[in-house]
Figure (tube, one colour):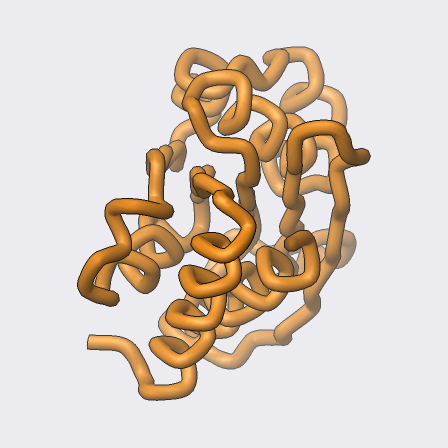
Amino acid sequence: MFPAATIDLAERVLTKAREKNIRIATAESCTGGLIAASLTEVAGSSDVVEAGFTVYANEAKTRLLGVPPETIAHYGAVSEDVARAMAKGALDHSRANLSVAVTGIAGPGGGTALKPVGLVHLAAACDGHEVQHQECRFGDIGRSEVRMQTVDAALKLLLRMM
């Protein structure tokens, strides 16, 4: 289902999380659950993966993760502020102590001059630390490829946070 390189990244995340006794939650919009799926593709991941929130609709971001509707209205769903709020919300609404969140424009449509297809905002939150943000501009490389590149970027961000 996933490329070998992605599974290798997922295994590294899981191994490091086990070593540090970390539980992980994901909050996903443009990837639709693929980050959680990549982690749970690895047998035995249930000792690390706490929860996965697939929050494609703005209302779901608010209802399930507590993202303030005014943040979405002011900055747009694809923004640093919303990604940070999603990552924090995943911690607040689970028993995880590390989370990763993604929101972006996978395409083929939906892009604008300011927010083009391939723009993805990632954020990671960890108990006791400042929420980290990363912006990726993958370009108009195709919907599936934007989503898969986002999965890999999210797994790498989790590794850096541990």
